[in-house]
Length: 288
Ligand code: NI
Image (cartoon, rainbow, N blue to C red):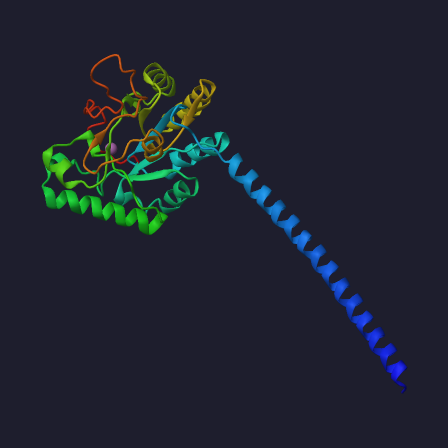
């Protein structure tokens, strides 16, 4: 091969290498811009997803339905249908020694996003027993609820609303009472329960009911759409406190989380900690 030919060959090779690398560069650029586009799309999708999820605000009208003495499948099933229809949640203060018998209902409570609190292990009036029994009642109920539903309790309701210094000193969960008493255990009548609730409910109320009575489920089926039409949002008691900026304290009694009162008086009481009347049904008789 002559010197000239070799030079030509080298020139051709250089050209080829140049063209190939140029092509590579362009392709890389295109890939890079594609990648950037994809990233941008992903980011905008993420942003859209985040902005569409807005929970209830402190300024919304909030209310918490609470049910004591269950679980009890025949009534719970009816309540779950209402909750699913209106896409709402509630709080159940369950009795520990009933949980094994109604385990499916307890699981469903958790699946629906409802809060499960303790109503002690055997519906024990805690004001009538000592520190050891109080702790045992709380521990045993928390354990069985967690074992079956997977939910760790954050709140409790003392049976009959009964508390004293020993109870307050030994219960490590916030003690949730109520400001609206449906008196369902006494009425066993949906219309009476409905009227009682609608006459006394206000923003931040905690409504007391028992998931033992058919009439209670019927009352709930009327109360829920009515309160929704009045602009209420249903929340669990723990969410009610969190949304309104109340930090739950163990052993402290809460009856409601009404919105903060305008500072026209010297005393501002956003959370009432007064013990409401112990008008919960005073005897515990199993219905099943
Ligand atoms: Ni009770």
